[in-house]
Image (cartoon, rainbow, N blue to C red):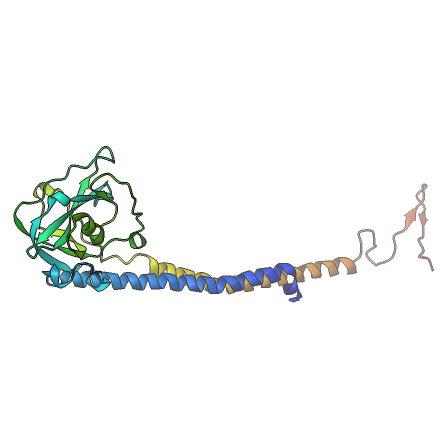
Length: 287
């Protein structure tokens, strides 16, 4: 009764099921690995935010690429702000998702080198080609504290590094680009300022990175694996249903063929015919 499994329809159905199972298993592991990476990142952020701050010169140097292990490390820097080379980073959002810009101001260290400081978010100008209103940086020597971040790239951020922008406006925070513009040595990466807070709350400080939520990746992984387990179960259910339907169809056909028709007499003899006057004619079967 399972010979129907060799039909074209069932062969195609079986092949699709066999292809779906490993695909769903792989998708489950993909979500599981994303869950693991999220947990590892949360742990890294929490540990680095709890670590004691260190001078930025201990973790970075000109041309240095900040390793992931140092992301969000608490650092300090002492120097004077170079507002003449200040730029804004376009298309950045505030904590409540308003579109504006980040203020990137070079800080000249005591040894003459520079570290970039992201002072925070400001609203964009009415015209995108205009320079937004940026509160002035503190004058004189200042000590800045904040989180160390790596230079931004298109590959990591997904932000296109557009050319031909208005003067003093950039798309990405890049110590190498700013070193070329300023003409001085710039430490790799930049500081996301947390202290001192700006007077009047502008620029608006960037919020601490989220390191509590883990997302729904683990739930998605389990969901894909349940789907993978459900494929063979569904295939078996369909196959058994098909077998039952075929058995019922065969049984119905046998009963119709073996039983008598509506014109047969109850005892199996042929019915009598009648003449016009009502007298019966005995029907005989041909020999």
